[in-house]
Image 1: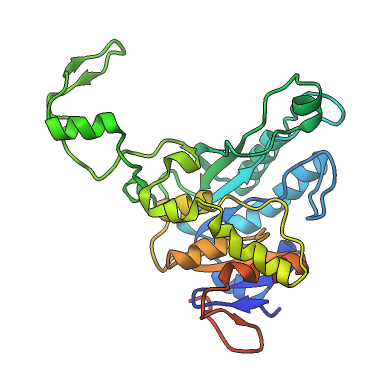
Image 2: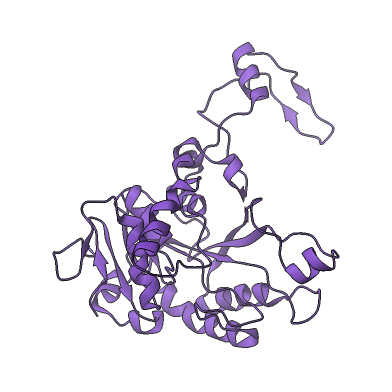
Length: 320
């Protein structure tokens, strides 16, 4: 199974993940993956071009993959899965399939749930259209669930790598070195010097959105990051992937849970946002995409990277 292309740090395979797990590169990665960062096809009511399962078939499918994906992890590695909301067919009622799928995956892989994170995208178009735009009886669906799982309760992680900028009030406090210490109505006792140290930023919340990113990740938070990919698809008469992962989400967890040189895997790469962010952050990566056209189009993520080489024109990084 030859890669579609390689870069300085990684490679992309065109195959269903069930088949890709048998590829030499994936077998070589077993037990060495520091982060599986992925957004599998969502359990939507209708079939999409990118091949999502529906209904209970989705739960069964995701459960079947859980042990094999878990076996890729290093002992202190993590799996981060983004799953969007789903609605029941023909009714303004939310489906519990995303939660059922998460519980099924967690149980089958015998993983710990480290934290539930929300990925908020306030710019997302209003949906589901029938209930939000037409009947006006529901609110805009503007977030996805992100589940951080691991083999151990204490996987490798460091929130100091994803500190967010201090708000103006905190900046003034650090400047004045004065604030009202003492016991708060909540019962917490605030010491006289507990908030006077500049740690370089605030601890990130478990809601990730473009408006509260760590400064180091701001370069991934604008439409310019996607422009090269969309241009490449247009020039090569390829349809861009319709459900692209937010680059700031991938960047946040890659920074939070890995270090330069670590190995990141995405078994449902789509437009390969994960691989591109891993490349930019100096992580090794191995990604898989089942659709040949989407796999080809994802090369546009690396158009500006001179080390990107299509298979047959050179060699790139392997799994060490």
